[in-house]
Image (cartoon, rainbow, N blue to C red; front, side, top):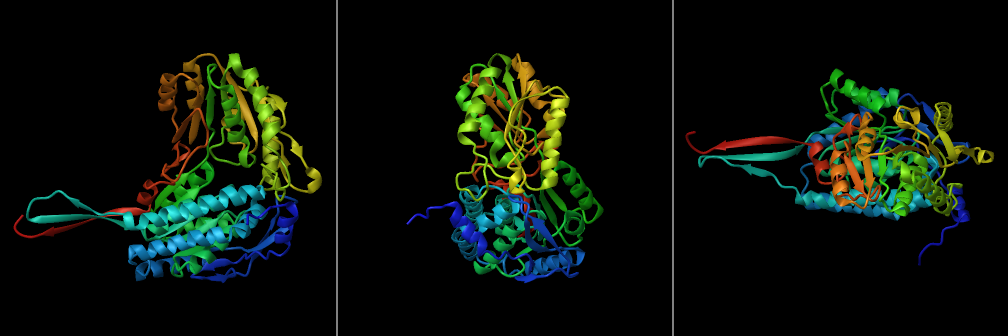
Length: 501
């Protein structure tokens, strides 16, 4: 029987929930070595949330030591591939079985609607672990071409200990993007989730042990970036850092890698993605893509379509359609309300930043057509309504800087050349899209946009079969797809000589 979800159902689940807030190191929960804790404020209502261990260097040292010990033992990396696969698939199944609890933990931490947490974030996290579990017994080594008296084996080998630092906007999904390929490849992982969103990561680690992953293969250290993330990135016994977050912090991570042991780095960073609409486009499809592409998850998405680059002749009609889609489909509400499509922003300081960007947009000459204002303040939570600005030029803050809130900036153009110049006039290169019925133009334009993903007449469509990552200051390295395995491995040549060379 399918569960019928109501707000009362979720409130009852919340009342009985006791989130675990301690680190998870070497297969067990641990308080911080210092005994320090911190408390999160719930985005949905501003009330005190879970108490979490405040990690530091000593906790990172313990987690890295556990990860290194299990890696060197070979208990996981040398395990029969089909057995590792069974463990990973069981882990994915356990994520699904605990879906309601994981969804509630996610919503408590980040304020997104509970049904989005359940139907999108939990589902994709489980699918990600399953995808890489299925790959384990399908990874082949190579034999290089040699003369008759030699055999050269080229092996793909795990790096060792991987440090993963993940953001607060899609914790479960992005954790799975790192954990799946890193662990499938045979590495051990120390995960430092964002301090705003640690609860689901701790639960994922518990379920990994239940699924049969050896203790130490997946460890979680909670805490602040400067206190726990930095020591992880500087650690001399960490072989790689996989980071998703802001470009500013990504640059620090690169510096920490250079200052320590020249560890590998993979970065998925910020974006200011263009959605380009030509006058011959299907405006209904473009309006839906622009609204959902920018406003989903309250705009807290790295590849959100925040720059609407629209041919001037159809701008007014398109904005009217975007407003209609937003009012009809994108319901802002309390995160425990099953009808809510978007919920709260992550925290008060971030809400203030978003509101300051909105104010800057008006000061610089942008005109607010609708929305983009604080709402539901009587709840104590941090809510900003989705909104659109017009009369924006590409030199304004709304067009240059990440807002990371539900604010769409419309920039008009006249010619294809002008549209392309505006689209590429950014330090970022994460994603983009083009809407046109002219397929020659669509392919010409999609090839010319400098971004890791470009959509034609759609937005934000993807699968685990397609890699995700950026160009320019949106980072390097790819999550998802078979290519993600490569970044957690290195190639090792083993040459055997049978006779004289």
